[in-house]
Structure formats: C-alpha cells, structure tokens
Amino acid sequence: MTVALKVTREQARRFLIGRQGYRAQGMLWAGQEGVAAAILHLGAVQIDPINVFERNHHHALFTRVAGHRPEMLDEELYGKKAAFEYFCNALCVLPMQEYPYFAVKMRLLREQYCPTPEEQQAADRVLRRLADDGAKTSREFASGEKIPGWWDGGEKRTKAEKAALDSLHYTGQVMITAREGQHRRYDLPHRVVPSHLLEQKVTEAEYRQYMLEKFLVAYGLSQTSLFRFGWAEAPKPEIKRLLHELVRVGKVVPVQIEGVKRPYYCHISLVPELGAAMLTQTESAVFVAPLDNLAWDRDRLTDIFGFTYRWEVYVPAAKRQYGYYVLPVLLGEEFVGRLELKAERAQGLLTVSNLWLDKDTRGVREAIAAATAEIAAYLGLREKLDGCANRAWAGVYTDNRPHV
Image (cartoon, rainbow, N blue to C red; front, side, top):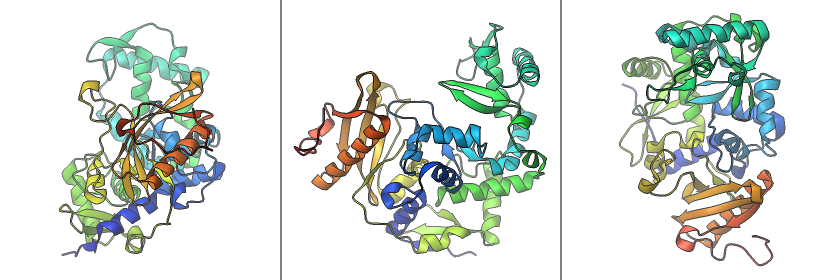
C-alpha cells in the first residue's frame, strides 16, 4: 500500500501559488517569449469570450507575463502556430506540440457524434468550401438556413454553418486560425498543424495516460471528485483505475493535507517542489481571473485556502451573493477579498464597482489600489471608484495619487 505524503496547508498553498508563475511572486516571464513559456508551463490557458474589463485568457497571461499584450497570444496561436485552440479544461490555448494526443480525443468524439441530417449537410458544405477557397468565418457562408444550436433549447435559432463549424471544430475536422472580434476564422487541419505532428501516431492508451499526467501537472494538486478529473474521454471508473496504476508504479503520489479530509494527488515530477515550496515575500496583489488555473477547482480553494468562491455569471442577478464578474484577490499566500471591475471604454475609465474585503488593512488596500492602477494602465484607462461595498476604498488613495 502506498503511503501518502503528508503536508501542511501552508505547504500546499505555497506550492499551488508558486506553480502559477504570477509576476507578483517574482516570475520573470516577459514579452513574446514569456507568453510562449507561460503556455508551456501552465499546460492550458482557458479561453472565455466575456469581456467585462478583459477576457479571461488575456488577464491570466497579464498576471504572469511582464509586458503582455493580446496580440502576443494571437502571434503564438495564428502567427507562429506554436499553440492551438481546443477543448481541455474547457476551450483552452494548448501547446501545438501536444496536438497528436488531442487528435485521439478528436477521433473519439467523431466516432461518438451523430449530427442531424441538416447539420451534416451544412458540415459537408462548409468542408467543401474550406477545401476549395481556404479559411473562412461563419459569416462568409450565406445559406440563411437555421438549425438548433447547442444553446438553443431545440429551437432553430443558430445559423446552420455556424452550428456545423462548432461541431467540426469539436471533432477536430477544422481548426481556428484567427479571431476577428467575436468571429472565429476556420481552416482545415493540414493547413495549420505541422506535418510531422499530423503524422505522429498515438494510441488510445497512450492518450489517456498522457492526459491524466498532463492534468495532474497542470493542477499541481488535485482530487478525484472534480468532474473534469483526468481530462480524458473515458468513464470516471476507468480514469480512477489508471490513476491507481500510476500510483502503483510511482508516477503519482497520494497527498494528505493537514486538516483536509479528502485525499489529493501530485505528479511525481512535482513532489520535490511541493516539499520545498517557498514564496517570495510580496506586497503586490493578484486579481485572479475567474477561470484562472488556480481557480479551476473551487473545492480546492476551500480545502487549502479556506476561501469560498463561486463565479456568478450564470446566476440570476437577484440570487447572486456578490456580483456578475467578481475576481478573487490574492495577496501573498492568502485570499484577502473579492472585487468587481468594469471597463467603461467610451469614458476611458476602469471602474471598481465593488470591493469585499476579508482582511481589511491599509496594506491590503494599497496593494489593491496598485494592482487596479496597473490594470488600468494596461487597458489604457483611468481608475474610477464607484459605490464600493463596505466602503473599503475610503482612504486607499493618497493625496498625491491622481484618480477620478
């Protein structure tokens, strides 16, 4: 029987934060090379289209890479083709070198997928057009036909070609080659993926083990009740069986965290880092993106940080505890509160509309003020304070600090 590695909550917190590579903790990633390095280190950066002040994927990179600009991620994805967009934790930025493993997932999904006759006809039209004319966006197809989309509740509200492109991307028959505002541009894989990666053969067993190990490295510490556990297209019992086999052969180590009932798991390659986890002393706050890698497992936030976080974007306004797009505030090795930011670009303002502090000190307020100013500068906006909850912003700014 494998003996669990015992660690304190403090060790676990320091390890998880240190794995993130936040600039506030001293990470030295910078510029275009830093974006590439961050993607490789994190394993996946989750993409989300909601843009209240900045999109999730860009904010996640902003907190880690000095001098990050959105066009740098575009260059990795669509210029250098060093990364691609596909489903992992959800839709994510992934290193292109891992395409052969995800190609197995794409094939498995194709085998399972049963399109309606209308969707199949639309897909055939799309594939013919892409083959003949090259990359296209859904708005460049003009049949006018509507069919039920993923979010339509059975009603015919989605353009047939748009629904077909979504399914074709999910099953790996097309790839995203650019984004133009909210519109995606698609092309066939052989025009996007390097030929040696298209030709690389990976078995289904190799795929499942690779994905489980990739998952464990990306999460750092994880627990099996997480519905995404393992990142592989397989039943949960099969993933658990593979996990136990990896534990048996010494590739994965069970971890018992002091004061936490549920067991966690750590990839063997990270165990030295877990045992020696140290954090740089910092007075800089991180506004953690709602879909940031550190926030992927909300139960883990509660277990290890004693912090309860729920993303309330899809919660009706009347039932929200906090707000629509609320960010956890990390300072040092603890979460000290939450805040709500909104970019009002027409007015040139970044509004702090709400702030809820669990730890209310002048140092916390000053760290939050400095982080807000940094984000405002990145966005080319000025900070503005708005009716913040519990009046916690009172006195944050000194007289010599300009604000609206």
